[in-house]
Image (cartoon, rainbow, N blue to C red; front, side, top):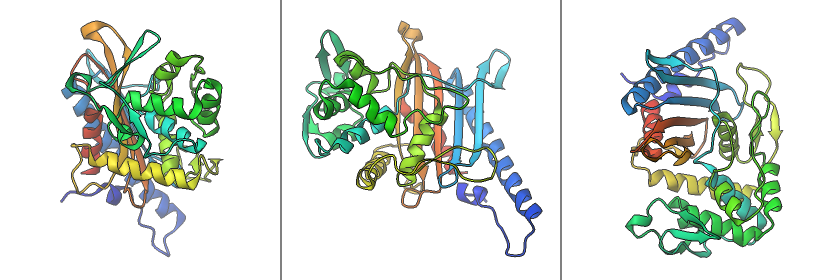
Length: 333
C-alpha cells in the first residue's frame, strides 16, 4: 500500500516514549524519505537527460530539513553532487509581486496591457513564453501572475516603483529575499535602469541557491514568518518575524493555490500550492542551458512541508512542469 508523504514524514511520539525512541523514529522517517527522493530524482534526471538536479523538503514551522538530494549526470551515471546549485531563478515573479503589493499603489485587480507578448524596452525585447500564440493582451495584475507573464511582472513593478530601482531592490532584500547567507551568499546586483529591472524582476541577472528560494517560499507558507533552515532537530531560529503584511501574504497564498490549479501535473488528490517556471542559465542556440524549477508547500490549507525542485537541462523541450512532475511523484509516494 502506498504511503502519503505526510505519513512518511510524521513521527509517532507516544506519551511515554523515551527521548532515544523519538530520535530513532525521526532518523528512520528521514532516512526512508531521503532514499525515496534520491530514487525519484535520479530516475527523472536520467529520463530527461538533465545535467543535474536538487530536491529539498523542509518543515514549514521549524525549518528542519527533512530531505536534501543533490545529483549530477556524469558519463559513469547519476552521482551525488557536493556543490550547491546557484543560478538565475524561474521563481522570482512571486517575490516581485509581493514587493509590489506591499507598496499599496497597485491592486491585484488593476488592469495591465501585455500587448502581443513582446515589449521593447530601450532596445531590449522582453517576451512572454506564449507570444507566438497571441500572448495575453490586456489582463489584470492577478491574471498576469497566474499566466506567468514576464511583461505583466515588469509593468506591475514599474507602476509601483517607477524609476526608483534602488527602492525596489531594498524592498525585496528587506523582505529577506536571498537569506540565509551562511554557506552561500546570493549575488543580487541592484537594477540600475529599465532593462536591468526587467531582467531582475523575472529572475535574471542574479545567482541564488534553491535553499534560499525555498526559505522565502516557506515564509509565505508560514504566514510571513521566515525561519532558518536547520539540518538536525533543535531550536528554531527566526530570521524575520514578518516578511510582509499578513494581508498581502494571504493574497499571495491564494494566488499560489490558484497557480497550482493551472498546473496540469498535479492531481486533485495533491493539495499543494506553488509556482513553477523556466529560466535561461546560459544561452547557446540549441545547446542553451535552462533552469527548470518548482517551489511550493503542502497541504495548501494548512502547510506542513515546503519543497523545491531545481533541474538544469540542455536544449528543448524545457518547462517548469518537468520539475512539477517530480514534486507530484514525491507527494504521491
